[in-house]
Each structure stands twice: as C-alpha cells, then as structure tokens.
Length: 212
Image (cartoon, rainbow, N blue to C red):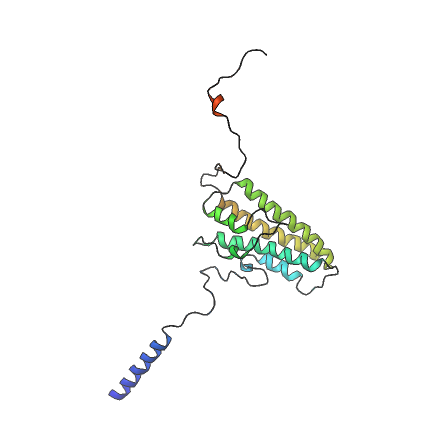
C-alpha cells in the first residue's frame, strides 16, 4: 500500500513540475477576443456588418484592373473603424490593434492610433472627429460605388453593401462621440486649432466712439 501511495505521489509531482512552464497558446487579448478579427477584416469581431460586407466580395472577380486595389483600401477603412472601436471599448484603455494600422493619404487625416490616444485623455474636439469620420465615410462610399461596378454586384447586393457600410461607420462614430469628448461635453482649447488673439498693447484700450 505504501508503495502505491509513493508511486501516485511521485507521478503527481512529475506532472506538476513538467507543466509549470507551460503557457496558453496564442497571443493574450484580454476579454474582447482576438484583435486580428474573425475574417480578413482586422478586429472584425467588433462589427458583423463589416464581416458581412467583406463576404459580399469573397467569391467574386473584378472586371477592372483597379478593383483589387480599391477593395484592399476599402477593407483597410473597415479595419480602421473596427479596430478603433476595439481599442476604445477596451477596459484597459491601451493602444493595441490601432497601433498596427499605418497612415493612408487617401482616407486619413491623422494616424488612427493618435486619435484613439487623444480619446483616452478626453481631448478630441468634436470638429476633429467629424472631419476624420467624414473623410472615412466619403472615401468609403466612393470606393464602394466603384466596387459595386467592378465586381458586378446586383442592385440588391449594392444596397445591402451600402447598408452594411453605413451601419459599421455609424456604430464606431457613436462610440467615439461618447468616449472621446471632454467630460462636460464642451470642447477644450486645443493648441492644434486656429484661434484669435488680442495683442497685449491694445487689451487696455476702450471702445472708440469718435469720428474719423
């Protein structure tokens, strides 16, 4: 009996020692799921509309030479919207997925990671958000209209595609407006914005009421 107990204890000790340095497979992603997403859209788990929109083009061939490059840029915009939401709703408030997204002259006003970082400090004027999201929306619709023609989508598919894009864009925009503004709802003075200045030499002067 003592031999059996010794064998069992020795086996348990071996198992514990052999497994103490094991780690979970894959990259740790917190409670939000993998930042790389569930499709070819980065952070696609944040928007079923973005995934459904990407799937519309999955088994289609472009009839124009510009189609593949337009589709690549369009998916890039979708990824930025999804990854921005992914980082904004993260309880840890850490730049994760947006850090991997480079700047694109055709549809960015600033690095999306910079915008998210300013959101964490509540220092993004609504005007900046409107401009950034407006640029993504305008460029997105421009590309989508071309893609519907290039990939020969039917009228019904084209309408569904526009609906998916609008829903994805609006979802992230609403989140950004809620989380990026100042606590009191008013924009703070931002050194990046143009503002008026009164020279010191005339600050003490009163209103002129005479005649020329």
